[in-house]
Length: 134
Image (cartoon, rainbow, N blue to C red):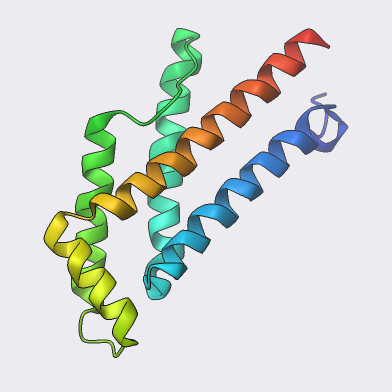
């Protein structure tokens, strides 16, 4: 019989890393004014990361950052989500910030998301390394 996830020694640490990743990513999206779609965007990014992790585990390779194609895809999706919310009244600061990002192709927000993902990959790799050492 398979053990429950909580019975595993490292399960709790992996869970904490995942929750921290979610909190950081959703927090950045909310701070940038994409509140309406923050969890939708998070779900898409999480799905993409899960796909990357599946490829990595099959190749026994640990990723350190998002591939450029994935970064571009995320920036494009951010623009699409912003386009859906343009009619929603916002504070002047959020409106200007998002509009400027639209003009730059969501470069800054995309970079922040890439840094959060990089931090997540490093934390995951550290957890796996500690697991193997134990």
